[in-house]
Image (tube, rainbow, N blue to C red; front, top):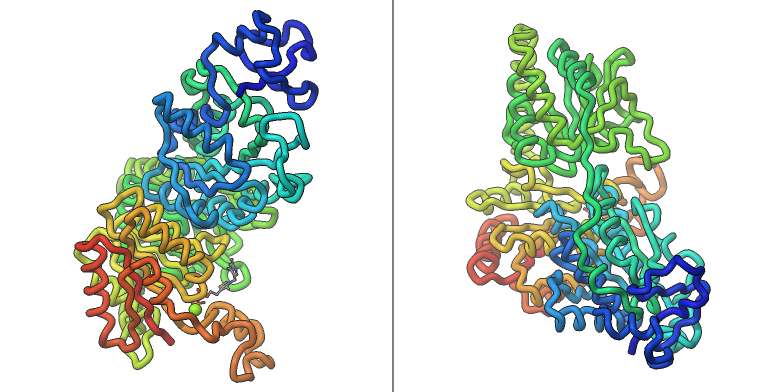
Length: 609
Ligand SMILES: Cc1ncc(C[n+]2csc(CCOP(=O)(O)OP(=O)(O)O)c2C)c(N)n1
Ligand SMILES: [Mg+2]
């Protein structure tokens, strides 16, 4: 049944008679059957091919480049589900739509899919409640600057009289004054669909804004009556109207940065978010190597250099920062902790990246003498080129630095190896080293959410490691791994996480999704019986305090713990528990056999100190 607006109520000359227009504010909707036969409104509704707005929505998502809509449905969805079926029956090109059984997982999968492909995806959520479940994932996506289109239904505005009006109490129960407020701070842009014919241009704009630099999630709210209304098919299928933009640096700033770094006596580079892509990774490796500049990854989220690179000095800003004369900060939210570290007051600090001042963060006062807005990889490549053009600068200083860096990294790697020794109760370091050996022959991606430490892994690619975003919304790594595996079924994806983080991920939903979509990831749960990070934080704040003096720091133990292997086994995963250090290498081999050869998801619960 088709509904159109009463066009008589719209000012003359403002309406394209070939389009169905809905004016939700002013005009009551009328059924096509109620229009006088032969009237222009009736003709425009019956002779012009039309689509429901719900159908147009999916076709448009495909047109802009969305491969998957990670969806969780609800009573706001009839026009969406009907629209999808309608679009299918009309042979429109559509994205894959997947039922994802928890919204947190839906957004986490879009996050992982983007990391694996560089292609932004969409999540369809149920009104305010589904959106609330997705909010942590949206905060994480914003922190990692992951573009995606988040959409949720809006409870019907009308209480009667329209297709899509409220039908039972949930229509009132889910009403909010400002539904978008649930995710607005995590989103770059948001909009509530008002007219069905806006669908195409709204999606074009949403996608272009999300994927423009600095990238991030956007949100669209979709009222049910508007989705039920028709729009012109031709408008929905017109060519995409808007394309994304990228950041480009000012050449003069780049040259100044290159000269400063080349002339420096004690330069240092910070790069928390990695090097952007293969080209950026190779350029940073070359630049650091040729100029003998230490690269520090304090609280790394992604790898910026191969882990074995001679200039990869690890996570500690000392001794480099306190002696530096030139500091290059590449896309790092908090490159060091001002409470503990600082560059000398006269050091020159260069900050570069897609949003080098992190403009949405209210307080972030890291000095920036030269500020360069650029895509990370492009900026590194340009800097590498500009420095290479300077030739044989500073050769003596480079050689001196090289010797100091190599002595430092040799000692640091010996200490890492020592920390990874097998002990009676396993450490995270030991698990990390065993994992690294077990996966050495693959081209893995390792995710760590309070899981295996970067220092213990041998990694060679820019995209072979991710840590949880700095927003710290736990439960991120499991769904992120699922999204990565969906994007690349041949790659080995290993999600390593704490027992707390595993529970935050809604593991029942995640294992169900892995089975339903045949995503054979390996999950390592490092079980220390609770919230080790919280406990550590309490003891560091109050080393002589009452909490530290007691047997147990309150509010940090998961006791009794569930049997993690049974949660996985409920979805027919391969699952095993490892208590003894000596058993871990064999257990990893066995789990990998299931993952690689039998294409079965696997979980190892590893008991650690
Ligand atoms: C959604 C969410 N809730 C709570 C926290 C606070 N938090 C930070 S670390 C942590 C403990 C994590 O425990 P686990 O994953 O087992 O790692 P562990 O610290 O024990 O190594 C918690 C609860 C958070 N970051 N995110
Ligand atoms: Mg724990």
